[in-house]
Each structure stands twice: as structure tokens, then as C-alpha cells.
Length: 299
Image (cartoon, rainbow, N blue to C red; front, side, top):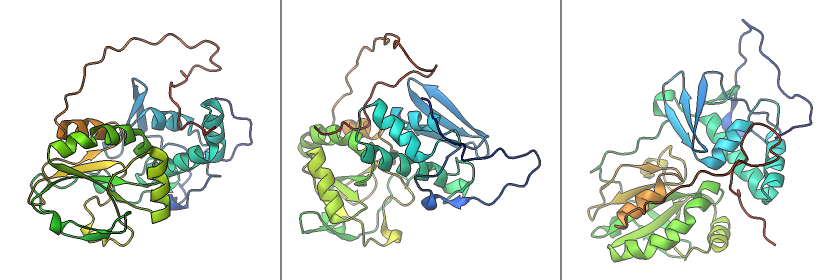
């Protein structure tokens, strides 16, 4: 992917004291993001494992996130990267730009980018979730349908809680699994509930666009001390038992959550024979063009 633009960053001279970074939530579309030198990316079947040399933490990026990561060279701005991706994959530029900005802010907040201050200390950046058997505190939230979701009143029922966001492109990826396995979960006596950040209008638009009809509770007014997913990205999920206790470990990311949902629904993962793809002709550089659309543009 070629970038024709001025350089927005500068090389730090040897011995020069590093300037304080900016907060991750202040990253804007003009920011030229650059990975920290001690963060190593290992590509495995078009996905990426990021190994933080300072803390030893390992984070996973799916195929889309991996492509974005490889574009972060400290020169291309988020706007420029988004425009290239949207043009290359015939995707909606506005959606791509929002998703790329969200991902870069997450990466910055986790301390993986040069010149960005992490949101949390390194020891709590990697979400581990509550231990299995933890009773979650009760809370009440307004639902998208105009009712109330009361966790305490759900005692006696098994729940699958999914941490959700209307601006999360990775949530879009698990939408087909939510739609397909929702009935299977219901047959297993498990109620699937999305706990979403964001306002009512954004969530309504998101579910309508994805064609999902699922219970959704709005976390706008939730006390952070009661949040089942503190410091955890989207999507992520827990299974709760009839006593409101975690019946599973925390599942995080678009790569892991679908399998977690299938397992909860009692559906075995089919074995799929994967054929090696033919080499792509006319590739402009030595990076393989990924075979996915970030999000198709409506016609």
C-alpha cells in the first residue's frame, strides 16, 4: 500500500529524552501512529499476535486488525490509512475510518504505540475477567425495547452476556454467529443479552443494519463498579449460571467469542478443510492482500 504524503513524524535521536505521550482518547484522524519498538508482531494465518517486550503480555488481532497494524508506520495518518483500506476493499469510508480510529485508540491505550500514554498500568491492561464461580453484583439497565434488564431478577436463569458497542467493527463480525446460534442457546435454556455502551439511537441503527433481534441493555448509566466487563474491549462474553455466578472464563475478541457461543449452545465446531490460496497476481508490494471486506458499501 503506497502513501503519497508528507512525513508527519520524526526520528528520535539516540539518547534524546522521549517526550510525554498523548492520552489514547485524544488520538484523532490526523495522528500518524507508530508501534513501540519493543512490540513484536507475529503473523499467523493472516492474524497477528502482538508480544509486548516490556511486559511480556500477548494480544491477538484478527485479520482486519492485523492489516491496520501493518499500516502503522509513523508516517501515514489514520485518515490516509482508512482511505487506502476503503478504496482497496470497496468499503464504506466513514465506517472504515471510525473502526480504524477506534482500534488505534485501543492499541494506544494498551501501551503499544509510540508517543501514546497507556490507559492502565501494564499489569491490568490484559483483561483476565472474574474467576469462574464469581457472583456478579446486581444492576438494572434500560433496554432498547423500552423495558428494564434487572440482573438480580434473572436469578434462576442462565445468561450469556456479551459486551457490545455500536461503533465496534469486530462486533459486526460475530453478528452472524449471534443470529445463527441464538435459537440454539434458547433451546439450551440460555438467554442471550447484549450489554452495550453508546446511546439508544446508535444501538438501534446498529442492530437494524446487522439484522439482529436480540435483547440489548444500555450501559450509559451503569456504575463502573457494577460493570461485569471493567476494562474489557468489545466483543467479549461471560456465561452465568442460575445463581448469577460466572460459569465460564471471560472470552474476548471476534476470534474467540463465536467459538465460545457455539460451545455454550452445545454446537460442535465443524471441521473445515482449508485449501492454500493461490498467489495474488499484480500485488503492488510484498504484503499479501487480505481476502476480506471491512464492510461492504451499500448500493
